[in-house]
Image 1: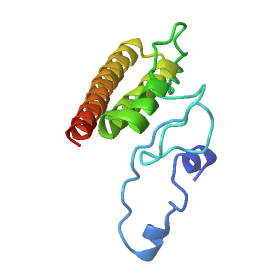
Image 2: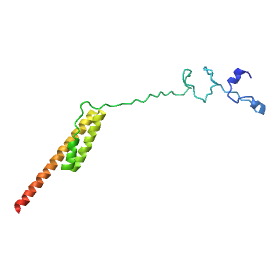
Image 3: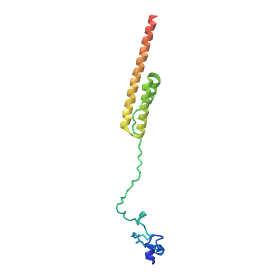
Image 4: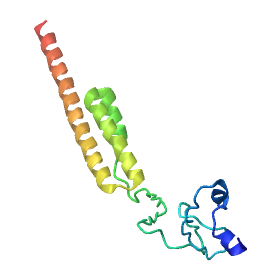
Length: 156
C-alpha cells in the first residue's frame, strides 16, 4: 500500500481482515480534505475557519446572534412619586390605603429610573388617588370623632 492510499484509509484499516481469513469489506468513501489535515471522516464535524466546507447533505446551519444588552436611562423629567405623602397617609390617616399608595409610589420610582414614562405616570396617578382617598377617610374619621366627643360633653 503506498502513501496516498494510506492517507485515504482510516486509522487501523489495514489488511488484517484478509490475514484473519475473513473477506475484506470495501472501504467507505471518504471526503477529500483540501486543508491538508489528516483524513476527515463522515462522522466528524467539518473544520471551521478559512478551510470550512459546505454542510453535510440534510444538515441545517444555525446562525447564533450575539446577545444584545439594553440599558435604560432614567427619565429626564421624572414623574412625581408621592412617597412622603404615602408615608404620612400610612402613619396618620388610613393604614391600608397608605400601604397600597406606598407600593405604587415605589413602583413609580422604579419606572422613573428605568425610563418607562407611561408606567411611571400610571403608578403615580394611582398613588395620588389612593393618598387623596386615604386623607379624606382620615379627616372624616377625625371630624366624626370630634363631633361625637362634643356631643358626649354637651350631654354631661
